[in-house]
View 1 (cartoon, rainbow, N blue to C red):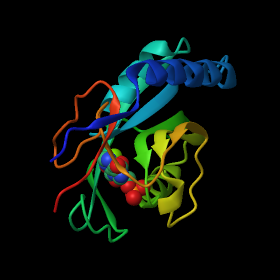
View 2 (cartoon, rainbow, N blue to C red):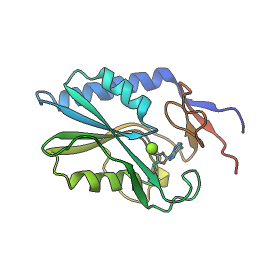
View 3 (tube, rainbow, N blue to C red):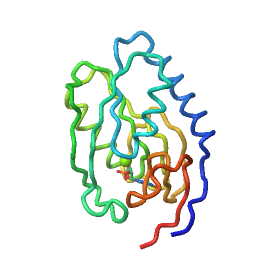
View 4 (cartoon, rainbow, N blue to C red):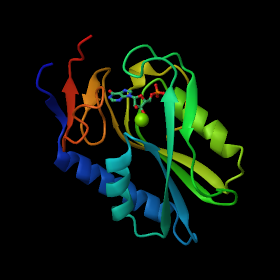
Length: 176
Ligand code: IMP
Ligand code: MG
């Protein structure tokens, strides 16, 4: 595997995360508590930076899903729940925090699952999105960056569990 090449630097990520946090602070001004649901594992770094930049009261939850089939290759579009949130979200203001929206199936599944539990509101934030790969139309309320159809690693994102803790978002050439 070749060396990852920086696509989005840690400085640009930090700047964008702070901008998004400022917008969320303003949009949810005055609410009792916001529930941030991080989608494991990829969103953990983004979630931790975003949460620390927020000034409104918030709580952290995690949820884990998996795609049927090999995550790195063929995406069947079927998603299954691996780990649920700990606490009920009924009547709560919720934001689902994703690392990347690729085909859109994961976010689409999660929105259906969580909306059925009657939260007061539900929105989505994703650090990255690949518009060229969209298979289902999903609402993205807060977006970090649109990127081309390349495989990215770092800042929480992996390639077969590799490169997840690189501080920048990098592009790699996946090998099969
Ligand atoms: P979707 O259901 O196709 O939108 O897929 C979303 C999931 O696929 C993400 O949460 C990631 O786990 C994974 N994914 C898609 N593209 C990439 C990438 O370029 N790097 C790392 N993971 C990715
Ligand atoms: Mg993910």
